[in-house]
Length: 459
Ligand SMILES: *Cc1c(COP(=O)(O)O)cnc(C)c1O
Image 1 (tube, rainbow, N blue to C red):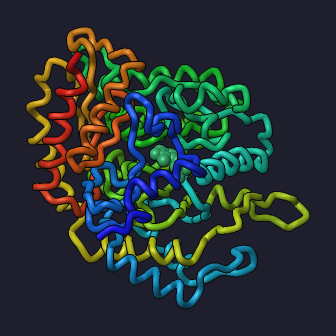
Image 2 (image 1 turned 120 degrees about the horizontal axis):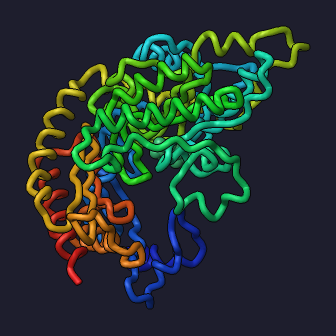
């Protein structure tokens, strides 16, 4: 029995009185508003499910912003966290260290592509991007190349929303307003297969886009520190997917033109795309690999930037040389977060996660296949445990619906009624479920998406 003070309505009212939520026009939650969006207070999580204050259950089809891997309140991870909290919650990470941070670095270097040799911790994805950008710039400065001050990013990219990370992002929704505050990157056209010419294969798009990147590097490599990409899937930009050959071509171009390759695996790392890391599908080792989100199984904020011994060496000198890397967060290497990350990686060692994901991904693919012929679906695409449906006004020309229609929002609201959490990116309906989701639960997600799409495209 719910005491009224802890009901959905009571908690939502208190929330809306004082809180300011991310990625939200708070007016959408105005109860008197027309298409009012509910504020849902969650009290408990269990497997792939979230349970609200009135006892209603929601299947988390997006892993709570792509963080969760092995279920909410996963008992094994929760126990590791409790144990760590009882011994060491935090310690300054300059001059001091601890075993969870050491062991996590060792383990990350063991499982990531060969050639990475150093780990720098930060406490969220955007902070990891800031670290990688600063480290790349500072490496070149220490090497006597202070003229390298620019970055190359892909169109449609998303790397976070702090000013540096937002600078190398190209999603207008997040970037446009703040553009006057930002660095200006060179934009290389994304190898996104959806943007290919009619009849062009994903691999052909990648080849063509690499030629365009080469042209950009020919003009600007001398002033460029690094090329930053989201390997295989540009997530926040609409789950746009591309062929792995782009990554091997990118690796070769970065070597040829002496610029760094920054792989932002914050969303795609940890088995999301069918391999432990997306870069594996192109057999490449980047100069910097940024990890976060799934790193702690969705429990705590933590990020890591992995780099090579060669890059590290450019900072290693007598103190008076003034070459040390300077970037410090109070919670760097937090022991609770590191311990939770270690337990998450232990689950990968103990359970056949990749195999199970392959079976689940195949099931999802089968269930989505019929949508390909839907008159308002321009594309159904999938890479491992990420699948997306592109809704359009006109299938033949791929003309989108006017953004002001907010059709994706109808899918979201319908999902909540059905007990499913799907949170479309504009008119792209996507699935990024926790790895503990069952085939039956996948069916529920897909059924809700299909009925939601019918509502969304009507009228
Ligand atoms: C989410 C995300 C980030 C930013 O991570 P935050 O922890 O939200 O700051 C960066 N890059 C990619 C690819 C992401 O998906």
